[in-house]
Image (cartoon, rainbow, N blue to C red):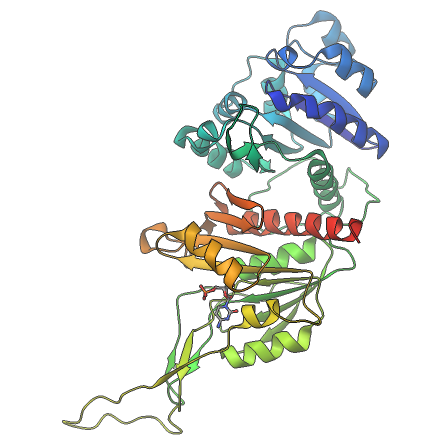
Length: 428
Ligand code: C5P
């Protein structure tokens, strides 16, 4: 039996933990709970204990508790530690490595996966201090889910800060445990867990098992003549990470990539193309798909008539004029298909100004379900870099995600996509 240690923080979202415990118990998990002092202002240890069927741990220096099960054992016996709601204060104390109460002591002592579900007022979430703590914790290997956009407990306030829904939490816990059980070396380096590998056995299917995920990645090269081409700075890192994440979640994955300097992800069918038109043909050929993520930086224009031979430099002559024509918009073409349109079509929008506004307009214009928007202005270092800071633009609104590695953006996105598909299936 898999053990979940739930660290309940002091926020209004704590009430969701009662449902979370129930749902995890229904799935056969043993749930133990630690509550911070502040959490007990919102829900009582009595209620949590009754639902989890276990004594709730609240005190670090509790003679009786320590005799039964000490904080080190509590930390070590868990296959996953879930912090929900992860308040701004709790995240700050975790980032600093505090251990002055049971919750933080357990979090410092554990060697298991730690999943944090932040919940707080949007101003607190967006504060540089919180964002700094989140980045630190990510570097330390902590995984995050949410916060989501929506209404806050405070009347009339909306924004990013709502704790992830219970169903999303359960799904993420299951997939993290499945990943761990599969001994999946995610190759990212941000998940450095020692001592727990192979200890967990899981029978739950990965979130995207049986699904086909199509991903475009990299730049396109549009020939000027046989030796020259128009290109852009896309490295393919984000698109390839998405393909790898989809594979890890159990999907069959087709990756259609322009010319890049990075290796093909393992276990993925890869089609190498050069031009936008080749990419569109390969995408059409790979359909049908459940999810299509268009992360490629496709050239908007190509040279109308590329030189058949190398264009020669003529002494004292005017430089050649290149006539450009528009390339097909692959994303728009697929999103507007009547038949064989993927259930979820996701586009990327690389912008250098008014990022969110442009993405919202693009989502509508291209009939896309989601747009992942990022600022690629030079100072962000996104092009070719390892990290990304994105906004997810959907029909419901815009979420600003904390800065993450490209691998984490990929994983978070695919987890969300899996949830979208599950809901789409339910509503049929
Ligand atoms: O319009 P813009 O190029 O900013 O849109 C970006 C999104 O559109 C990306 O998802 C990109 O992969 C996709 N796109 C495409 N074909 C094009 C241009 C962009 O699929 N010709």
